[in-house]
Amino acid sequence: MIQVCLNGSRGAGDGAVVPLSPEALADSAAEAVAAGATDIHVHAKTPCGQDSLSPRVLAPTLAAIRARVSVPVGVTTGAWAEPDPAARVARVRSWTALPDHASVNWHEEGAEDVAAALIERGVGVEAGIWSGTDGAARFAASPLGPRVLRVLVEVTDPSPETAEAAAHALLADLGPAFGRPVLLHGEDGGAWPVLRLAGRLGLATRIGLEDTLVLPNGERALSNGQLVAAGLVQYRRSQRSL
Image (cartoon, rainbow, N blue to C red):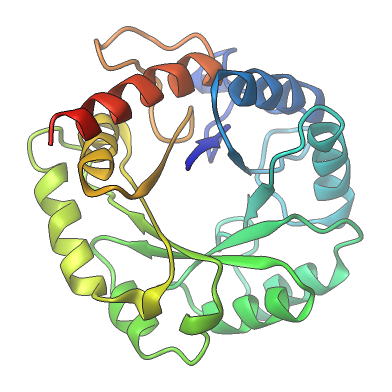
């Protein structure tokens, strides 16, 4: 599985290629799926470009994307979009349109309450385990661990020289992950080394403008579709190198 992460916390300052509006996200999602993406992760944005969990923002974003693609669509529940944990749970319970899945960063305050609210509503939970946090330890002790859809092993080390080692360390900290599927990815300078490691390990991965703005050769990416196409090439080459 290769997931496309369409935009993340990036905004207009990161360039016109980063999709922000529902229409731009739908266009980008369609191109990425045509290039081989089998799953979508998106940050729904307000008109001023801020991440939001509001149903008034989420519903039109999901509708626009689903009108163009048939693969699963997931969203973020990051604390930056709604800092108060109780308000974050209330947002999930207020959604009028439901994503197929939503990521929950396990190191954030209130993560288990958010995950429980999602599960109650029939939304799959991607447990986000970030390097440099206590997320792995918290997840290992969580009664919700066996019930998540998958585990996102998120390597936050942006260095191409050390991100792979950070990934190995995080995977070791995570352990068996309750037997749930693992999606491994990196960010910025670590995005491509970690994607290639995922290929060698036979794990799902993701790529897109949330994680990197550049292609493996260092050139600026023109679209999410271009990143997905390059990601599939890198992933398959890594598998063949075993």
